[in-house]
Image (cartoon, rainbow, N blue to C red; front, side, top):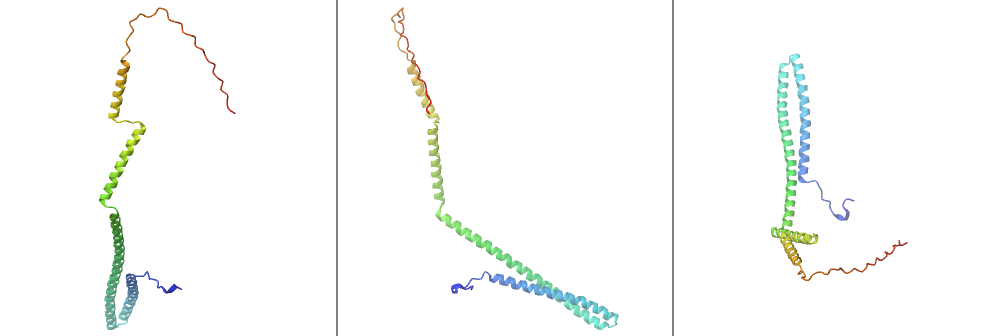
Length: 200
């Protein structure tokens, strides 16, 4: 039921993944071949010793030639395994690089779209407006808090001095002599304080 409504599922396995898998399989086959040759070389060396003990020098020589040929094959196999492993590593690293480049490409496109929305001039305008708003708010806060600028303080001091000068202008002293007897002051009536009653 994998193809519901006739849609094919897209495989996540890429061509590079298939190539890496094939290379690894090839490498594993070569490692098995190397193991088989190594076992054969040990066996043939033992057989060559036995042939020498039995006095069959020509057969031993022929067997050692075959052994030498297999050693050369073993060296070639080692080189091929090394080449395959290097190729697998190169492909895997290239896949990582491709993902990094794709990520950089997407990031760059995103940044370009953001730059289209907001230009340098727009940012400068917003910063200027923000600074103006902050300055305006500071002025309002100073007014509400009662703090004044030096100019305000100077104006307040000038006004205070002017009022003080006005108060210093005393009325003229009367030239008539003061009466000898001071009229008695009428007694002050003290009113009784009303009692406070707690509300219940």
